[in-house]
Each structure stands twice: as C-alpha cells, then as structure tokens.
Image (tube, rainbow, N blue to C red; front, side, top):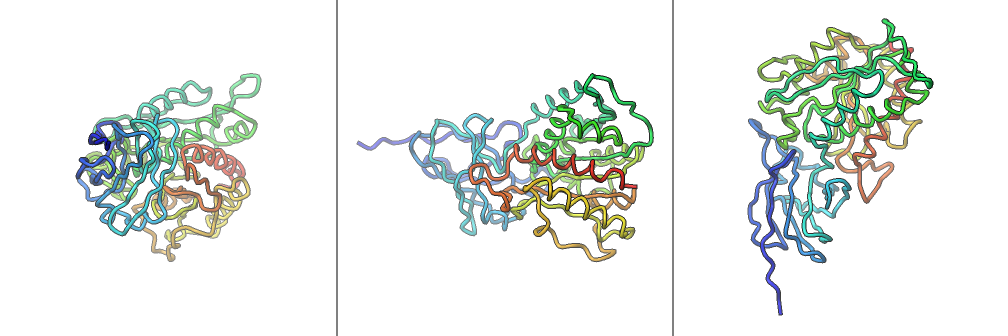
Length: 392
C-alpha cells in the first residue's frame, strides 16, 4: 500500500536565513525562490531548514528564480551545502537547467539545513570576538555600529608573547597590517578566514611572535553584520554595496565603511587585505591595484612577492585564474582595495575564495569550506611576515 507523505515544513526565520516558498505541497519536489536583499535588487544567497523529510527518500528543492539572480552564471558547476546538525556541512548534487537550480538530497535524517555556503552564525561571531579579547596582546581597539545598530568590533593584535609569557614591547614604528572581511554579507567564507587568523594568533607560534614583533594587526571580522544576519548576498540594510562605497561613505547609508575609514586615518595603513568570496570562479586568487593612478613598480613587486610566497606556502592558492586586470588609470576607486591602496600608497589586495571549490586542489565532499578558509588564513599571515620588512 502506498504511503502518502505529508508536505515538508520549510522555514528561514533564523540568523542568515533566506528563502521564499513557491509550492511545498509535494515533499519529493519543493519549489522555492530566492529573496532579494533589503532595499536592493541583489539576490543569490539562500539558507533554509526543511523538516519532515523521509529518511531513505530523495527530496528535490528547486530554486525557481536562480536564472534571475545577481550572478546566474555562478550556478553552473555549483553544488549546495547541507547539514543535519549545523556543524558538519557537505555538498549535495545540484543541477542548473538554465532557469532553476535543482538540489537533490537523499535524506538521512528528518530535517536538514541547506545553504549557498557554510554559514558563519552571529553567535559564533560574538564568541570569536570574546575569545580574541582573552588572547594576550589582542585588544578591542574601537567598535563601530551598523545601520541597524549591530557592533562592528575593530581588534588590534599589538605585540607577541614569548614562550615564558613575557609580553612584547608594542613599540611605535611597527607596520600597520589591516584585514577586513565580509563587506558582502553572503560571503561567509570571509569570516571563517578571520576565525583562522584569530586561531593562529592564539597559537602564538614562533612565526606569529616574529610577525607581531614588527607589525600590528588591525582586524574587522565582519564589516556587514546586518546583511549577514538578514540573509543578504551583497548589501547592507540600506541596500548599499559596501565595497562600492569607499569614495562616498556616510554615517546614514554606509556607517560600516565610514567607521573603518575613520580608524584607518587614525592609525595608518601599511598593508591591506579585503577578504571576499567569488560566486563564479572556482579558484582562490587575489585582485590588486594595477589600475590606480599611483600604481608603481614598488607596489607591483610587492603584489607579486605576496602571490609567489602564498603559492609556495599552500596549494589552496593560484595565480592563473582571476579577474581581468584593470588598464592603467582605469581602476574603480570606489572599491576598498583601490581606495586604500591609493590613499596609503600601500600593498592592497582583495583576496577571493570560491563558493564552489578550489579546482586546483578539489575536495568533492565539502568543496571550498569554512575549515579550508581558516587554514588559508594561517598561510596569509606567514606571507605577510615574509613581506613586512619591504612594505615601506
């Protein structure tokens, strides 16, 4: 006798949740839609829970408006992530037919969470900031506010601690190295990267001590907490793309960028890395400032030194695939990388990680993941140590 399955319960009323239900009456094939960012037409991020699954049965979830999303080409070769406990995430088969993205899940448990990428929860962010402040040498230097009033902590790691627990001197004249992340809120791999930075500082190994002996690290782990919490792809609550606001930041529309710029002016910048995720390109890569008016052979050499060193340190980086280089003088100066590089005549890079996988070192089970982003952070810190003496 055939058993009639009950409709699934689909919801996204939680941190970073995003989905709209089109038709959930058939548990074997649920039709859904991606919800746009607040006050913006951008959409691509999704994160939802499906309850009432039948273990042992295949369930299909179709995102009907995938072809209308901000980056429709990104769906080709993409596989969604799933988790039964929101701790361990894995890839599930997904196919784009030119109109909808179809996600197929062979259910193992009665409920599952599905997302565009492994989410970085706000609660984990709060725990990360609290843990960082408990590490010797890291302080909460300042805190900004998002449009909706969420904290934007600026951490500074200002000295190392030797093996016998004696703090470093924190002397003036050290290089000022800035790392910021998740200007685009759907790019959750960026804060996973920042957790990797904090983890490495907590380990306090010899290379960390050597780096902090000559440099201060300025860290903003999440530039766009409103957008991340609301399940946005690209913008803050006011519909502002923060990585297009570095020539026009305001307290009203983009206080997140205004805060970062104010702190940079106060403390200085000798190197800047803006951590992002790219929807389309299945590789880890950097973009730089070759189109800036002040671009020079010195900056070009620093960029190449950074890339060559990072390639030697990890297989999770490459220099073949990436964005088309800007022509001389043709940079978009509203981007953080270009604006900071121009203002401080410094090494300034956008570090991009994939939503898909790093095809030069693929992992079919997880694709690119939070754990891999964290590991990349350690290699970046080692790369900065190699360059610090040459930054000025």
